Length: 91
Image (tube, rainbow, N blue to C red; front, side, top):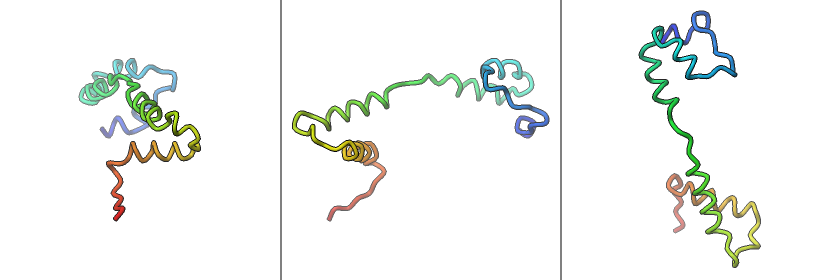
């Protein structure tokens, strides 16, 4: 870890460099770290959170609620998505 974090021994990769290629060339130098990075660099991107947000927005903005201000819709969606993290007592 110390060698990996020391910029004198392991210089930063260029922004245009492929992370997979960088780790492949340094596989023997950092055998354990290269396994970890291969695992985490292989996580596929997903659009599920964005699709859920659009679905929630569609449920909030219906024909009876078309006059809602954009700020209010934003706040409603924020509360809907974060209700598990908020402890609000309305009593």
